[in-house]
Length: 391
Image (cartoon, rainbow, N blue to C red; front, side):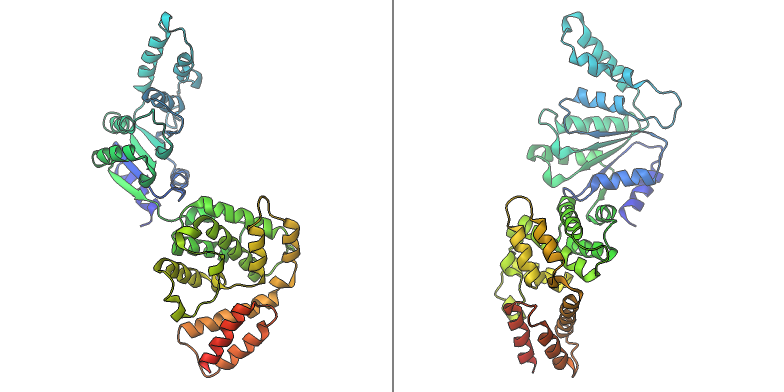
């Protein structure tokens, strides 16, 4: 049962009951996207309100937001929005000596008392103002669940919640939260936002996210945007292998920029390394190298395209797209050259999996000979050393 099916089952089993569900996951993994997609695919006639805690500074502001933004999908009669917004207007006036502030509080209370049998989603706990206490938010959520028969959704990344709020959340979690849905993959968000990209390339990004444990869609937003700018420089009809190498180089560039220090991987680590030499690497670097190699050999394969891309990536400010255009139409990424590299990758796969036959050395010799002139010396040395070793 996937997360959406599980959440749907929870709602069916608690159709007319108050409950609280936490949707958790790392920052940027797509928790809010998951909830919005669930709402879109599972229409519910209950009243509904989405609350971003960002910018709210008091419990009174929170209550006002709830009743003034609630959507009534079940009744033809609805309180006009301008009336529901009156407390906000009154709060902005400073003529408190005439009793306006008191009137606003009474009106606030009367209006909030009408909130019941609704679905209420609280989001952006990590960006909540210091003036709004998470204890008050959780207390209000508990009141809505127990006294108003509401179904409360809390969207948060517990690891990013401010330290004191994290402690308070943990205190309330056990008595408030009935179910927890953990969002662990950025895949749905990736597929939704990369529809113009070839399906195998989306699969490559998904595999990259899973193997490198990068579940922040904002990283992939940058990748998709820059990849699109590269592709704009190409003719309308372009070989898949060309698009693949461009995506790999874009992923590499942002990976090194955003995570290079943490994963102990830089531009100089993009090279072919014999297995016995990998033992000299730290465990973190070795794991990174192996993960990248398993996704696609090009991640650890240095060529002229990589050299040019690194040159652009190291620039300050905007990339030089006139130079990108030159490279995109150069022999460096021709289909013929890409096919030669693919053939070598396949041979390396055979070698790693101990699947070589009596034709392996001859096929390796032929492929290595063809790549002279389009490959850098370091990689050539690796292939010739491998050939000599096997011979």
